[in-house]
Image (tube, rainbow, N blue to C red):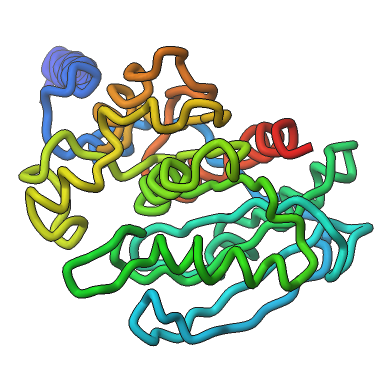
Length: 292
């Protein structure tokens, strides 16, 4: 193989990669997340702070709204605070296939990010998470309603722990990002000070939704948050999504549907913990600003 052939081959590979990148940017190619990752377009990976978190309480309850399912939960307190302190609270909703534990520890590490933020002068608050299963945090034909579990069972439980639930914040990623928007809409500005939707699982129609996300077109029409941005009036809203995320087109359209564009935005990143960890610090700062 001659040097000329090698040079031509290398140039062709560069041109192909560049063309693919442009096609991905234009939403032409399928497999958006995979292609962005292969092309190295997801940006730097976020890392969990190497700090000691504050105390944590855990428990479980049998949820009537989830048809008797045993739901685990945890509350993380910042250093300098303890269980029983009357702190405002951020409720975190997990994505599909996860449990409440994913919000903490080595997955997202929000307890560590909280400890770091408070050590740097942030207003303290607690972070609480609960098991929501796979039903997308809204009422289903089966009778299960993980959203009602949060509003009618988990929030009162948090109040019984001494936390200030008079006005709270909600954050969620993926399935939980949709759930955060749905539940915040349901509760309204009188109860919710801020909502953060991270890589929210949003679709333009029932036919494009993931299997199991909705029971069909009627369920989608009743529970989609698309086109209902006004239901969040009076609530501070933040929407973040990586441009390499398959949910990016719908998330961007959703953000554009507000009369006043929400905080957050769209930057390099995929649908993965590397992106979610990178966004954790600014998201918790946003929560602290609106809870304090």
